[in-house]
Length: 489
Image (cartoon, rainbow, N blue to C red; front, side):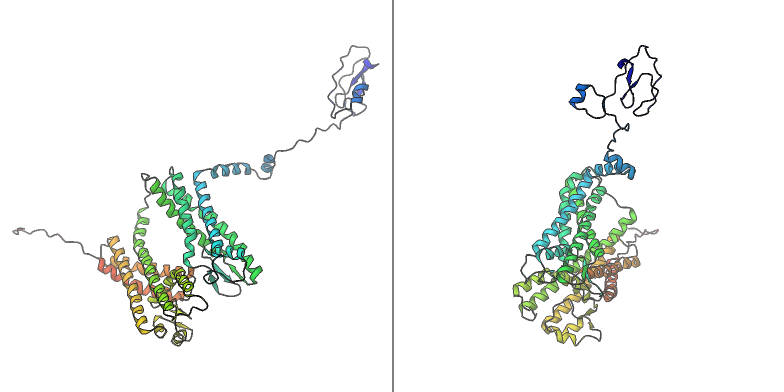
């Protein structure tokens, strides 16, 4: 009888009311009910799958299910947490940090510097062949050359494999592109950092240099692969020099931009004070560094003037270039010529060809030693006497006078209490200049000055001149005399 039938609580199959186990799934049933006893038919569970209309009309039992619950999808966040515990929390924290004004400033500074160098690379690649700078091969494709020039703005060097030879693509003036872009971007975002301390605002802006260095590294890899595929040369960018140049140039520009922009946007913000020892070191180095900057400017003017006069007078070989292209080339590379001419005025040795353009290279070659090295006096036969003698006098005198003034200003600024200490402050000029010119010589495109000779000769000459400036700066303290007995004043 249908009244003596019940449904299995597990699979929904009809079984006898007195059955202890389901005949379909084998599940043990609740306590059995005696036949004839009043029973309460349990409500059958909902079928696991949808039934057809015919099944509902005929009253056929629903199909039996497998008994296992359907699998549920695990959220992606939970799966990541299972593989890397704490990763989701770290991602949320990074997302929150990237929305802060400091992080946005760093992204803007780094992005602006990267966009600027790429745009400059594509613009420089459009220059006519006669005045194109930085081209390794005129047959290179436009995009390849543009990317290579963009990387060259970091002043990173291209090293030739299986050789000690390396070279820069762009002159020192090319480094102004990333530095200037970072400076402008940092000044632009400075008002958004007005709520920070001055030091924190500068650090956040300067941290954009890391983003620019990462982008410059990618450009170096791409442009190096282009060189290998199109030119078949073994030259490749030195990754360390590219990263270092990118960090120094963009970081310095961003720091100065944030400092000046912040003080302009928030004039009443409290200025940062350096620790006493650090402040003393900064004051001591400021004089020699300013003197070095003046020296580079003076030597750049002298070297550029010499090149321009030689080109106009026809004494300088211009090859297939026009006079205009030669003059443009001279101006573009004038800073590199000044960097190389400064140690030349300190009697440093050069190899093959010095920083100055030589109208008569064969005459100079005869004055070089067996190694092909020479000093400034070897240029005697390379220039007309009426031009070389004033050039020699002005160059050496300019070096000595600027070094003398640098030592004098440093000793005066430090208010040396004794003459020996004043001499020491003035002599710091030699150390700062020697290190600075060696670094600039390595970064310049004309590396014909011998590095060891540059350091030794500049250290000796600038130290002596700076120490003399320290002597001249010393003023003994005034001694007050106390009137003795019986002496009226």
